[in-house]
Image (tube, rainbow, N blue to C red):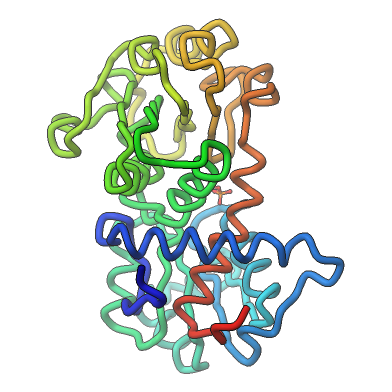
Length: 312
Ligand code: CP
């Protein structure tokens, strides 16, 4: 078991080793308790500077990175592209170099372009955390998903995890497939053909279904994905109603899975389109547990990258 991360940046789960994933999960588990204290703060990253640089909208990821930094005692600054000099035409790299001149320890970036965090990682001394780059990766989401599965099921290896919906646009799906496979889970995906990249199954080495019922049969975990209407260049299904008829997770479809199935969704949800309100708020849903664990995972990553004291 390793006790430290030697890498500078967290750009994707594709490049993380099993040992690194285990270290992040174990560190996050140790941070859960901090968030339950009356004074939810430890001085571990006192004097460190974390900048959250978000070029796309976010509720969960941006807020949880800010909370994570503050709970560890770091100074955290949030920059939204819409209120920055990006609107005056400043380039990504110029923005990042100007921020680096203020000596941050970690820059968390979300950007619509795949590879934007990788560009900063190459050019800057600060550690870079990918908070979602286009349809490429969202590694911190996958790590909090794994943490939630491990917390609820006691293991990840051997679980059947069905990921359903808009696979083509989903950085969450990609990061989860990489991480879950490494940790020994059996991953399957389902979605309409127009939302499944050609050769996705072959490239990722997993079964692909066009009927969600086949994918979720006997599943331990069902992860529903949001239809990303904002990323669609053209209509890829005739109507939301037709999509919902085939791919909305309803109570009757849940009964095809194992009787102790976990229902997950990264959020934000389109209620009634990919998941029914009864399922989203029902007894098998761990959607809000995912959000809670998101703070702990982000605390772990900031701690491991920014070199906090080891005695938490
Ligand atoms: N899951 C997720 O990334 O949510 P936000 O877009 O609200 O950050």
